Image 1 (tube, rainbow, N blue to C red):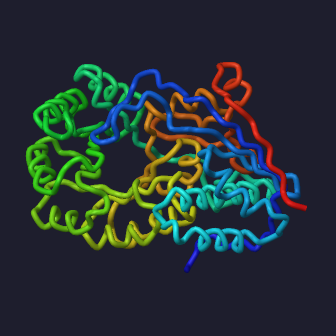
Image 2 (spheres, rainbow, N blue to C red; image 1 turned 90 degrees about the vertical axis):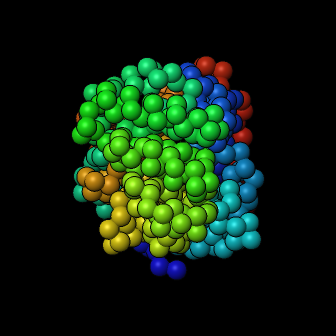
Image 3 (cartoon, one colour; image 1 turned 135 degrees about the vertical axis):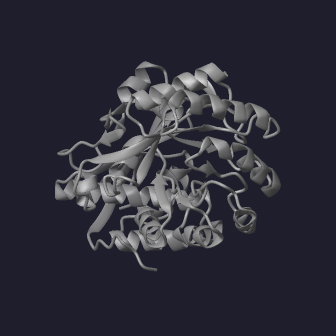
Amino acid sequence: MKNIFDFQDNIKFIKAVYYNFHPIPLPKPFKDGTGGMGKNAPEQGCIELYDSEGACAHLTVGRSFAKNILPMILNGETKSYNQWRDTLYWKIRNAGFQSGQAVEVGQLDLMMLDILAQRAGKPLHRFLGAEKDWAAAYKGGGSLLLEDEELVEDMLRYMEEGYQTVKFKVGSNDGTNMERDLRRIEKVRKALGPDMGIAVDANQRWEVEDAYRFARLAEPYGLAWLEEPVHSHDMNGIKRLKEMGVPMPIAFGESMRTFYAYETYVEKGVDHLQPSMGRMSRIDDLLKIRDLAREKGVTFSSGGRIYLNAIFGCLYEENEKIEYHEPISRPVGEYTLFQPEERGGRFYCQPDMPGNPQRMDIEKLEKHGLLESKKVFYAEK
């Protein structure tokens, strides 16, 4: 398996501390076309992972990370970055490379890169080869719970903040109320003008025929892309949708965990590849997908929590954007240290802090009653 990241540095894990959170409430409930109504951010906790040389990686992870991953790495063994990654990748193969365990292997991958960057005394984006400290972004939000006027107000604000593309949700009333979706698209287009990029996200709401009907009805509004109009694994449905002549670019990718799925997406006609930073089983797959998009002449963006996404966005070109999903990301950002600076449709990373500087603010979480428990794990001797 060809990898972009190929580090021989040895790592011995000696300790981990897991902080378990109470639910972090959202200021407003959020709803998309299929996911139900979310009242809380998805973050369950975070972990500090220490190596024998004094580095400490920090990342938000789910509660199962401690159960699934820590017994495999807090075993007293010393392995290279490559060996750790390959060992765990194949150990979880029977759980499937779309599984939560595959994502956890990707989270460990990211923490090991953090450790190596700290050792090198470089910010993670510079350690990985970035030549700039900023990432271009588009801004997403637009809950289906918003009234039309609230939606328009948010999208106008995003534009005034300097974003060139905005995105909001469609799939009202379980996908049956296309009239509402189209009315909202029309209002946003009129408010933002003819030159602003406007994308919509259906979150896999429709079957092929309904997706095609929606796309035809939305054609006059010049959408930048239609995101996940059908099931993300319905590869032949995607192909059929393209063969029917869907009149705008279609985007897929946030539900996939490995590079190979994106090769199939391109073969089936997907116009815009969208891996998600926090969901990959191998972190360098992000860059492999970016390179695939360049090779095949399709567009590329990546999603995920904004600081980590911005780190990798520093490795992208101006037209390869990261997504900033404000309604979910901003409330979590209130409990983090070292948020990237948001300015003029870009995010600026810390230029001189080694590794990944973002940390959950444990003191603030505890002060606000959101820290449920803390557990320390030590390596076998």
